[in-house]
Image 1 (cartoon, rainbow, N blue to C red):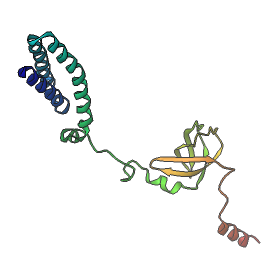
Image 2: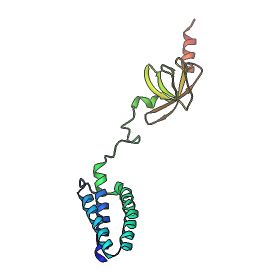
Image 3: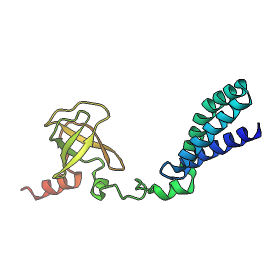
Image 4: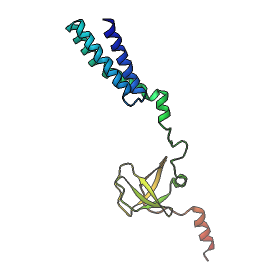
Length: 174
């Protein structure tokens, strides 16, 4: 009775190892041989013991696979395989010119449904609304920046001129 239990334990450990360590199926094949051997030896003891081993394997094998998949991201090998990637915090995925667009206004070039393009400060910018549908030709204002996402909403028209430029224009006119 101990040999079937040992083979069952070895088979389950090999399944866990197969999930965590890429062996191109060698560990999985050894696990299958160990699990099948444990059932055969359990049936030689008695048919009730063999059925209990079959039921145990039917429950334990998927459980061990799921446990292995839960542990996989934390394993040293998975950290080696998966690159860290970029984040918005390090700025690698962000267009530096977009940071100056906050509060600027522009004209929609392609309908925003809710994403599209608008011409803001003379350049085409991929923009998104908060769910509103905006047709081409409408004026929009940048209301939010998050990473590479430029969020806009409908506004009345172009930006009003600065107060300083109005005063200067009034002083230069005779």
